[in-house]
Length: 104
Image (cartoon, rainbow, N blue to C red; front, side):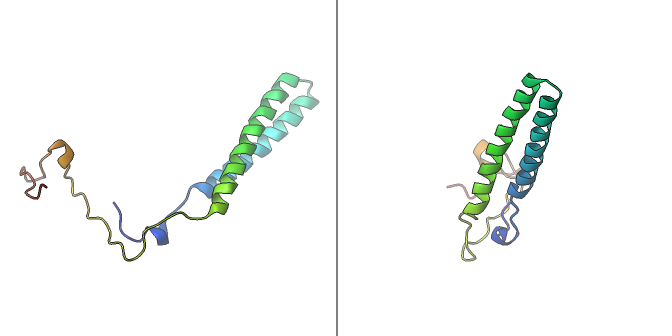
């Protein structure tokens, strides 16, 4: 349900995704280095491939963060009316067992 103050209180998952991508990038690079030192080139290649995926994800997340917020309705747009459990698309009755009267 929209309350009308989303531009003020909206949260974006991009910062946590950025942190997780950075964490994954660090661990996959460390894993690749460790496997190279252990003489396991196939595991090092797998870690390097995962590091490339994490680096790509990190670059995309940083790009989205730098783009900034996208369109949000202004204060002149009224909030939506709450649903109150009605679903006219499937002709479901409200809590009192009656149909809604204001059909178009």
